[in-house]
Image (cartoon, rainbow, N blue to C red; front, side, top):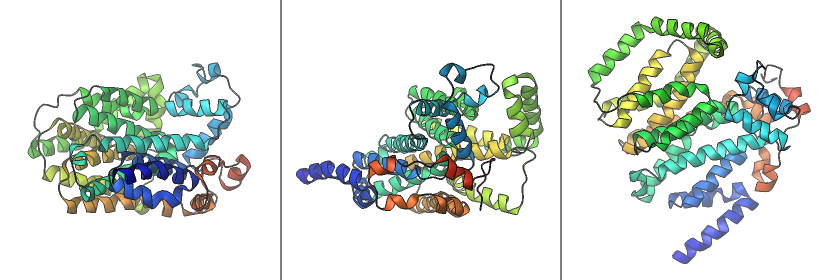
Length: 400
């Protein structure tokens, strides 16, 4: 038995390098058997798949940034007098600058971030007692749920929101579940990826050693809903008095991504689909609510979501982060197999939804190469600038 495990451990990575897709069934078998190296291979596979994401939307803007970084020095990159400095002040832009300076393909950035994201989420599994001590079928269900929790599309589409959510959820897990102060470090990394994680990190500083009753939670959320205008006034005050926040408040609070967002029936439907896993987890959470530091922190997160209800883009992004936070909490407590299977179905729909919504762009991509190529060939893939401009408008929208 030990000998066969050792042989599999040696052979499967080789098969994976030669033919990643063909090795996937064996990878899943080893994940069922709770072998750590198989989780690493699955994370790398998702990273390889992300290479073929067609660069439209925010990816088109990042691709433009990557091309421009080839012609600027590090001193120019950190030029504080440049109005674009606020756009560059994040770890993703710095990674893109390094890749451009080294003449490494833009797609490698997606590969690094997606693979790293899955590795972080899978590493959390091995720190959860129910996973470590669970039997194979039970563990496999938790593994599937953690796989679908990873915001794959959000990382591929815009890098920072999805990747920041993973770093932050990892940090929140360490602080609230393990009492490990290193969680603050991951929270700071999340802020260095996207500024939106400043507020969730500040929630770490609030007291978490008291019990919220359901009645108290309801009263607090109702009062926040009533006095939301006070929060809007505070945001406008900060926008007027803090130079770095001025454009952000104009766009994400008062502008087209905030109060002036164009809601109609399809965007409402899409929003409901995006937050359906979180809504179901909120139902499970409050139905089985018990005191813990993690539970108290999640109540603070719900309050934060209510504060941003009128503002489309911040609300959507905090929902992405909260879905991960509540998902990890659900895995820790695993209320029932029935609830977990419903949640996996909702998360899988959320995972597949972008492939339907953006089908023309996915059809244009070269994803068929993953059906027969080696890992080395997949890593070399690169979309040409001329080809992208034929199919994507200057604002990043795809030409149908």
